[in-house]
Image 1 (cartoon, rainbow, N blue to C red):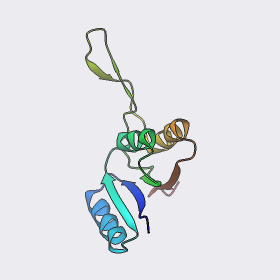
Image 2: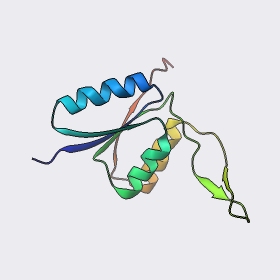
Image 3: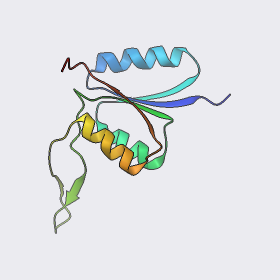
Length: 105
């Protein structure tokens, strides 16, 4: 049986390690973890994951980068996980995404 490929994005290393352990223990999942939503964007472009789980409240996402005329990489603005999800869906509308948050709103 094919394993489900999951990417879990959270800024807390502790939480990433616990979730990775729990999911891998089930044997039905291949799991990658990261702390930066840019990894989720590249995963969506490559159609690498069956599901991306992302913490929207504490997710680092500096969005895309652009280069100046000399080829130097530059950030254009600070963004959050909600904006990352919108970008993921623009890139790959069929990508399954689960949004988590610790923000009580």
